Amino acid sequence: MVAFTGAGVSTESGIPDFRSKGGLWSRFDPDEFRFERFLADPTRFWAMRGELMRALALDRAQPNAAHVALARAERSSRFLGTITQNIDGLHARAGSKRVVEVHGSALRVRCVECLRFFPFDAARAALDRGEVPRCDACGGVVKPGTVLFGEPMPADDLARAESWARACDALLVVGTSLEVWPAAGLVPLACARGARVVLVNRDATPLDAEADHVLRGSAGDLLPDLLARAGLA
Ligand code: NAD
Image 1 (tube, rainbow, N blue to C red):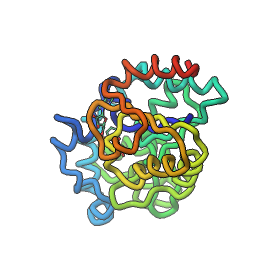
Image 2: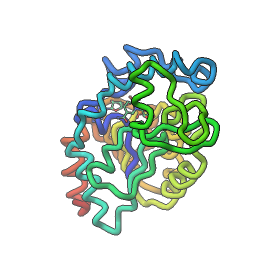
Image 3: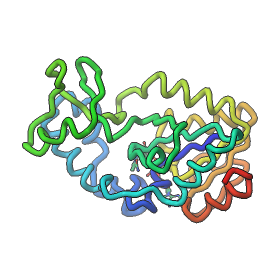
Image 4: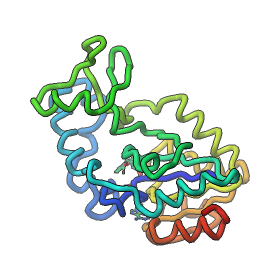
């Protein structure tokens, strides 16, 4: 089994998702967070990004029962790991070790010149002064360590996620609207290779018809029991 998670796995940790009713896209314009906007005006971008980060409130969030159940599943050799679209680091904080973060991590920043990664804290002082953070090594402008809209996904992470989707017998899809591509493409990829797809989500998704089983409900309620029944908890 491979798990594939999205923002819905973290809403019960108090982190809002994007597309649910009252989600972040009802308060922010997604276009403000495009890579081109960052390159055109990093000062404005980081000001908006600061507001988004405050709304996400990652510092206060703790892993919930769904993150913990997925971390426990790693004790079994039948569970390959978790591919996540999330940027909040909660799978790792719950104890998951085999995690592919296909959209990067908000806990890091990256220099657009020398491409080095730094912990987010390295940028915090400049952001608190209302300045664009700069790279300690080369002085280049620093961007969030997440994949921005319009920015390609890191090829090595995408390749690893695709190889897991091709290798699994079962893909457990949790808390994602499956609206964001190419990440959503992992579901048809796994289907095409004959994997069973189990979808756990509060709302309908465009790929429900591709799934073998669709469970409507909250990840924190459903996942511990589901993984226990599969002998993975
Ligand atoms: P999304 O907002 O598009 O969809 C979330 C889905 O999760 C919805 O379909 C909703 O019905 C479902 N959901 C919400 N709470 C749930 C719960 N408790 N149990 C089960 N289902 C639940 O999010 P997405 O599909 O992950 O894609 C959007 C992008 O959002 C991703 O690239 C991700 O990087 C980013 N994002 C991440 C975080 C985070 O890291 N926690 C938060 C917001 C957005």
